[in-house]
Image 1 (cartoon, helix red, strand yellow):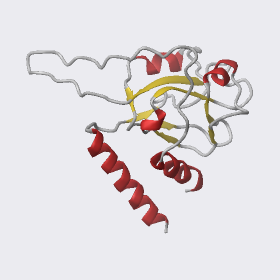
Image 2 (image 1 turned 90 degrees about the vertical axis):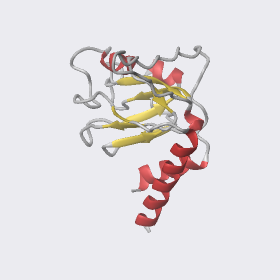
Image 3 (image 1 turned 135 degrees about the vertical axis):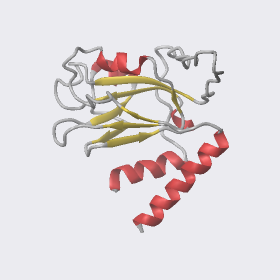
Image 4 (image 1 turned 120 degrees about the horizontal axis):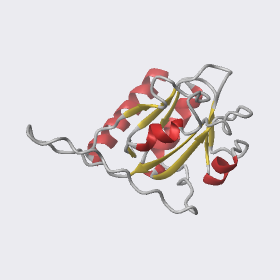
Length: 176
């Protein structure tokens, strides 16, 4: 049964990528440091996300030690107050994978729910764009960097978690 579901998810993601004409990317949050309290300062995850362009077909992978951290997908107000009690989703089993689709376009917020971790800088805010155009280059011209989209206004909150792809992927994340 699980292999049939995994096959279906693979096909759905492949079709979604073809329909939208972009290449899905996988980002490991924090790169080699992973998802932890940043020893290099509370701006670590802000700096990590600064020069990256996230699209509605990408995946975030949060690597962390089991029973030492968690990932909560939260609203802006809960992000600002480091409150994980009203999270849109909480992932406690590493590695936590978050898949984006068209219903998650916009500013997205993640925090660690362990006491004191968020306030110590274990929090991430990113902007998920609907469309990503691959940069073009010639052998004599440098490759331009993707432009970081401006952050939406403070009243913007994450898009509702709707859509067949998002629901199916959340089910797979939590149960498999």
